[in-house]
Image (cartoon, rainbow, N blue to C red; front, top):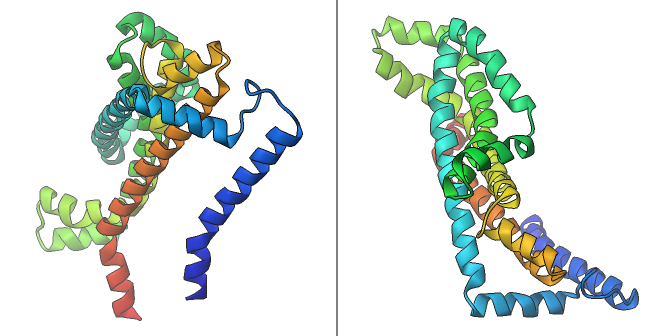
Length: 258
């Protein structure tokens, strides 16, 4: 009970302490607002952009890019990852290409995609998919290959079809590792979308950060950053909730064994 109360109040107390320190640094240091605005100034700017609808408009654009890029990267990683896990010869062919593509920072690739595809939403979706793709791919391959050969032999002894092996063995066994990669990809998706908006965009939260920076409106930059944090944490929370739902059978199994 004490641990539960401690964990419940730890986050609010930490936020209050951070806000208090922030306020003291801004006030005691007598820093100008374009260097470090006070929490009150950031809150007032937040209210302004909420009332004029600009925050919602830019947030929806970025969220659409994040979600679309995450789904595209997820689908591509699942299909290709399963093929690479099952076909060693295909991995030998494609692995150097995949590793080489991931060794180049997304910041360096983003300008090329903006040039080729334009500053629209499609280039941001592809940038997001690229940054999401690799961690999900690697975790899926590791999850599939960590399955014991004895389990495969057991499934074949019952004359299981490839579909039954996939459904009843490979998916449940690889799910914990795969969902770990998905959690990483979910947070990286926000980074990918913002990187694309930094390079070239006329809307989105990354664009809002550029606007605030150009106008020395640091409070607006803080508002956009905090919105991105909330977005990333929300997506991460949804994936964590999905993980608990999909892996509930492990907890039930552990409880039954104990």
